[in-house]
Length: 325
Image 1: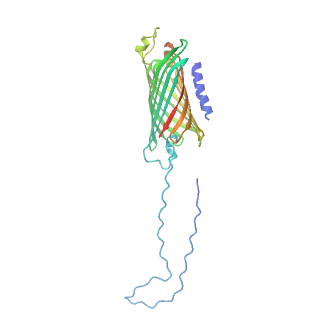
Image 2: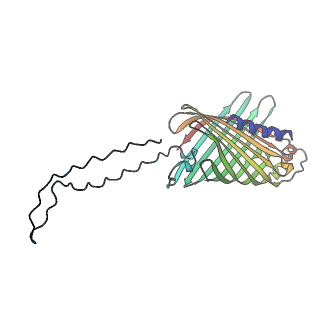
Image 3: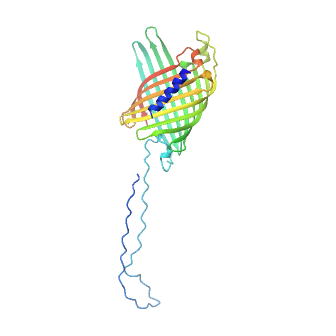
């Protein structure tokens, strides 16, 4: 109960912290010149054509319509499709990736490798977000403190449909693996609604709430090799409630801060809850590349993790380069 309250409090704290028209003057048309007085022409015969009255002017040609001004798209993946009027008709694509690597020697030796890739595709009001994150840590600590060798993987596909500039419907599927927690798979399917709580030129604060269903698969073969007895359900499943809060702050042209906090509460009490906070700072190098520092915290609190005698919380500090195109 204390861990659940603390995790919910952490999400609330993150949420709290992160909380032309030109009209041209119309021109008056100039007065038409008055035709001079003319005398009555003599009667015309049948073979005589009538000439146009003297002093008359031909009708002016219709002005050509002004060319439509092209919309400035900018960073469309950071905006609602409803901010463009009319809606952008073309397919839009955006991709970015981050590569981080750290190597240690001395009292602790080993390496940490992390890669994160993202693809955004938009058509009309709908946007598809594809996300891949893979980490590998192989570290040995001195003075007999042991070591750690594990991999972590996240595959996520999410579809957003903008109902207005502020609200959108979301739905997605996520496959997560963490060998440190003997977790082969955590398959999550969810639906919900997202809202932009605050937005200006420098900041954007959003919150997503939804429900879903989660299926777990734990590595039975490895667990049976542990030197102590473990009595757990290797394939538990449960419904869950989900909350995601994001905050983007463009502090200056040389620094951008991003924060994402996620919390999931399982309806099955034995599965407890899990939460994660991802903090990153970007220093642009040029239009496409930037230097990035990331601090990541993950917490998986349930009776299964406790029975496996592993730490419920995992933290990582990463330094890398981000590319965007």
